[in-house]
Length: 582
Ligand SMILES: *Cc1c(COP(=O)(O)O)cnc(C)c1O
Image (cartoon, rainbow, N blue to C red; front, side, top):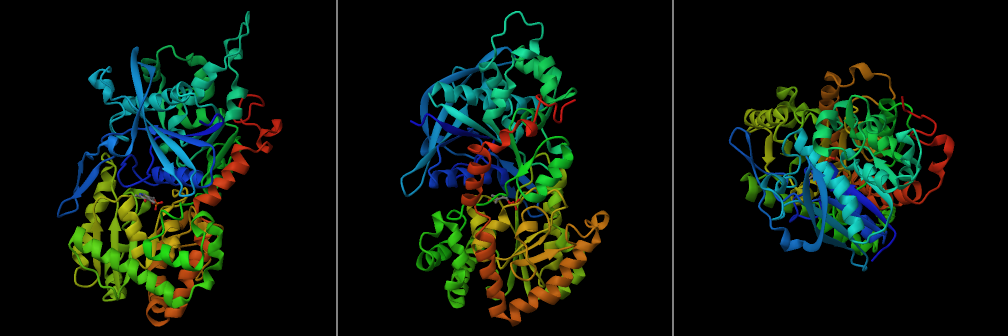
């Protein structure tokens, strides 16, 4: 057993097809993080929730209306139930938390355990058994209970299992209550003090915590009213001290994490800047996300890389040598991946795409800011440009309570009907890890059109790049760093530094999208195959080369986990110098 671990806390994690405990990019990133940690032999453990009903399985009706079904899965098929149990107090009741383990194994022998916390134990009341059932289900109070289990229960569980931790990594603010549990552990024994605040050794906690924020908008951060907090946590932690750490008005999980973490980062350079503006006074770094290269490379490209770039999966820097692969072989591998996708779509969506027509892919959570329907802003123009020359595949789930997100899916269905016979548009239901790999590798061009600056990073485009599929995207998130116009792919709309910010989310984006498609992308694809393959190779050699989670984890190690530079007193977040605090 490892006695000096980095503990990675995450509300969701997407590891393999059979474990549906994720909703989207945040969870898949967590899975990729742990896979890279295992490959690199890092002393890590992960802590998450055993959501027995998963997120949900998506069914789509004729008109695109989303129906949500619980996912039936049996944890005992892939996970091992461990004997350990720890208590947490919720609404004055003792709730027992159990744990299951999944081992992420690397072929070279190293592994990282993922611990799934579970309140569905016979000893608990029916209500409490349901706390961990659904990912992001229920109301605010329910969410807070889940966060108690994750943060407080998680720290207790690692302790119970005898796992010593020297760093806690908070993947988003959901697990920030773990800082309170640590404060309880390290309480200073100062007798005869008048000041209750002096007994909390914040400094010691801060030195152990790393916080990665993912949310570039104020409204996206978890906040709980203090009466709810007291109702659920009771007298677990003095509210006066908590207000000082987590905000006067609400318990703001992001503020709590910011105030008790010594290293804080955003998930792309741009997102770091945005976060520094949102949380003035805090030192916020950035480590740009990456994806797990082996996981996100399709079978035909794995075979190709094995032949020309042996060792690539554990050393994605080898993609720098992509020019060693003949063009013709790149194209053959892509054709195979495309055939796989066409086959799958025929089977699952009952539509057959043409292997001769440029296929655009757009798949991610269906939520307003991602603007999945920007492509249809001028439907006549799209039909004119794309007739017989373009086909489009969509996929993505809307959160069960996100009405605008659900409406977005219906709109795409209706546009698909309008365009029938000219531009084929497919919506593949139930987006998940497996279908994601199929789409990112099988299409020809990966589209992304978020409202700036809402795409903190985005990762699906990095997956596409691993399969030689170039990106065509708004310059936000990772693409600001990955884009070289006409070399690695194409931008939509203005450069971030061009000063057109007031207008940049307006009609200009659609205009640019259409004109680039018509004048640059379609002609290159149909009239200059060697030119197109050059861009495919650059997506691999310049994007996949960098935007992988092995690089990301090496950065976390040297910048966050074992560095000393962020401990400089003058730079420290939090109470000592009043940095960022009122
Ligand atoms: C990669 C992935 C995402 C994230 O996609 P973005 O474009 O970054 O939003 C979401 N869902 C699944 C299933 C994924 O594999």
